[in-house]
Image (cartoon, rainbow, N blue to C red; front, side, top):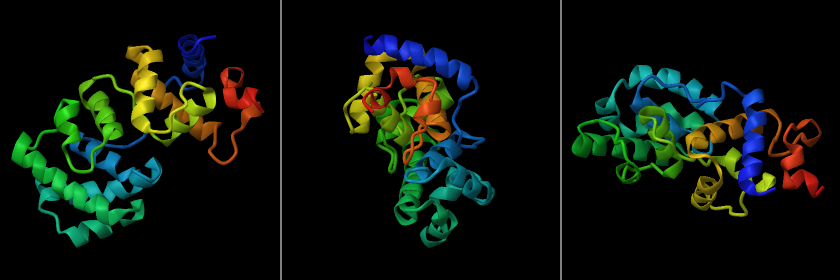
Length: 210
């Protein structure tokens, strides 16, 4: 079975298991999604959602973040880890949004990647969630599962993104990645994959080589 056929079979199973799989970051504005995705680097979405509840009450718009006191913002986001670098990037990012984009979130990859703290994972997620532009969102779950399954041999997220673009139907790019996240949390745990109860184990190289 080639990789494209394997993906189709896996999607059929995932559609039954996770029909409502979606972005698990809670947000109400495009800016909040952009910031929450930055906060989610090396941090769980669940923890980011807890921190963001109070954060977005205190900082209500791009101007609030752009004018934030660095030390104060650091403390506000400290539970998400790497808070010094994240706070610095968030302030710089929002200042750039005001200076170059009238405070709006760009609708293209090129401009998004120029924003401090924004990589391809964040850009792809924002483009899909806000503008409906399909993208492959490679987070830790997608990286681990696609290697286990045998859809890629690469470890670099950007290379994995390009590999998946070739084998996943374009209209399912983002959805497939959301479903990988749900499956990673429910079954394919990083420390101890529950292979015996995995519904896609017959398509998984990791399982078949055990």
